[in-house]
Image (tube, rainbow, N blue to C red; front, side):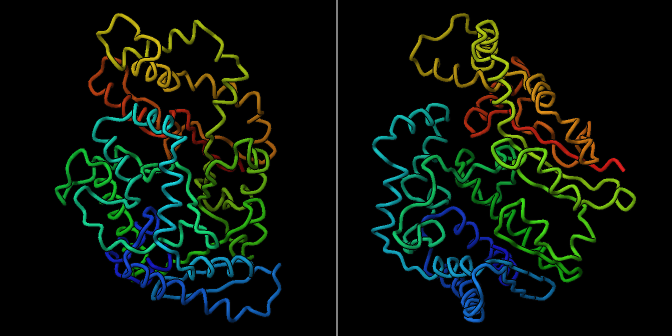
Length: 415
């Protein structure tokens, strides 16, 4: 993405990058641009490092106007990258492999459950994307998308690399997608079309900012274990420090965990005397689920009944009876109970049980009481049952891959 963004005009780069990210097939013109502006550069690097050892991190720096891109990979990684870009897949084979995953007969129950939580128009868009494999507005001509996307298929056997649950809408705020000015007159309920133009506009803005002739933009890319990254950074980067570090959800217990995450990345933040707002941003995706299980809330029938009542008030405020077991409404009701949990209480239990204060003290940081970079609970329901727009907000969250339990925590140095 960065190499294309730095070399191509923003509109052209955005179109190619969007389809490289999300579409199973590309046009021959798109693949030619990837070959010219990415593959050629990688092939040149591999030719120059052919005699280097496999266990040495090898750097290549490219400068495009005011954009400086440095990529640091091990030789086998450079080799694999070129192999991926070189592979010429057979379109019949790749479509068979893709459909074998996204339209697998034994997964029909999963797909129908997913559709159960979507509106009619969203069902149509979801099904269309599974069938075509191309992210585009309804009515978009796809006859020129005849070349398999080499980034989404395995370089040796052409198997599809994505899960059958993978959706291009994941990672994007549906509120932002639907609020983007509809300058192209896309059907108002065509979520694929609205997402297409939202992502394209976002990438265009990124490209324009990256290619800004006024300031020099430097990017450094690695593909290593996050715990090893600090020791691999150039000494000048480690010495200067960073104003902001975002580490996704590696602070979850299943990955590095909070203690190691703080110990690894806090030393890279700028000193408080230089920038008191220098911040480490962590995301906890699994914390509430773990804590909820430990607290025994799943078997608390009183709590469960209260959650179901709240869900019913969101779904159908005037309804007096619970839906029949096994019905579509019943499935929605049970799936929706996770969206109305008291996650503040659950996360507070998690912080205490894990020992947030102890880890923070050891790392000489403190947890911000009020986030300033990203909202603490960005996906939780904002409206109460009965308020205007509450039902729409609830349906939107239910149709997403989020649960409302996603918690961002920001850390700043104490001294």
